[in-house]
Amino acid sequence: MRLIIPIVFCLIAAPAGADDPAPLALSRMNAAVEDGQVPGLSVTIRRADGTRIDLHAGLADPREGIPVGSDTRFLSGSTGKTITALVAVQLAEAGTLDLDAPVSTWLSDRDWWDGLANADALTLRMLLNHSAGVPDYLEDLDFFLAGLIRGNRGYSPDELAGFVAGDAAEGEPGAHFSYSDTDYILVGLIIETATGETFYDLARRLVIEPLGMTGTEPLQGRTFENLAAGHTHGLFGRQATARRGTLKSNLDHEWTGGGWVTTPGDLVTLYRALGDGGFFAAEGAIMRSDINAFDEAGTRGYGLGIYVRFHDDGAYRIAHGGDFGGYRSSVIHDSRSGLTLAVQGNDKAFEAPDFAFELLGALTAD
Image 1 (cartoon, one colour):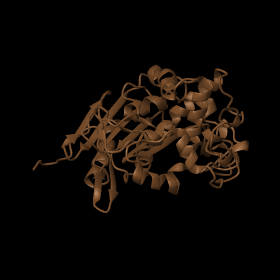
Image 2 (cartoon, one colour):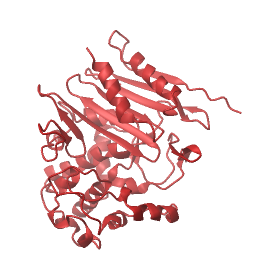
Image 3 (cartoon, helix red, strand yellow):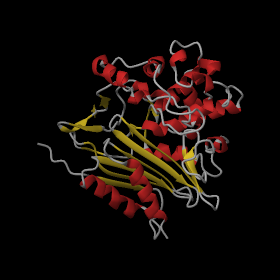
Image 4 (cartoon, one colour):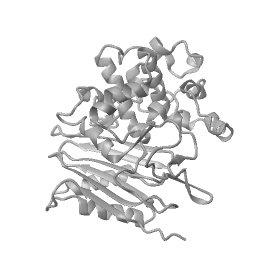
């Protein structure tokens, strides 16, 4: 029998000091592991001055006794929607796409088009900010039943859209917020139709390579180097979704909804590139959230592939979470403090967004 002991690694790219966030973050990470919330955690914190701290706790693979390390990777889940939105917005800035053009411009010849909720009223912007009212295929009974018999054959984007064809709309297009992975599958189809290139090739060229996100690769196939073992929960307790770097199921269908294998360090790099003076000129476009704010003042909303909260002094926070395949992720950039942080864990039950926001709050408390 192999003795399994959580192991903590702390790689610090900045000198320790009174404002060193590592001890507090490590304490919270260790507590989450010891409480059984998650087998392993990886956190990256980037300070306003550019220094970066990488922290690790627990086990990437409890069965093999492998600790989480600097090269451990996780499925991104919906944090990858930010990449999809960045590709779409850059294509719009180049004149290849029009965010406010009817979706019918690109998709009206699809077999499922006539049955798609709100089809004739949809624009690309509505898909990107989840105000389209298109049902989520992940919540569709037919998709669930198909998964019971389909094995590892995977699904094409058109098959995913077909699952919700004929389903009732979730709301009036452009006037509400209704989160749906189908929205982003449709965005992917639009991108590939308009450009004649694959989405993943475009994302590499426009986002991944310019930012040097070397730990990030498309979720294609089942085997990935340094992949943590994800976990879900069922009748027999915690069950692994991967072993020795190989996923037990084909999860390619996440695609433009967040189909990436990545690290917290790369998520921090991505979100810092969207912050003040960041890499992308697209920053202003994706942060626009006036269409479907969550409150009457319009200070909280969903922009294009990103959650946004504005403060009275002009400061803001941008964030996104991810939940897919037994992995949880969350990434935040806080303009007031200049901190960017990302959290990834290998258990579906772990509330990564709550952990991330609570950690940010503790690190920025006066």
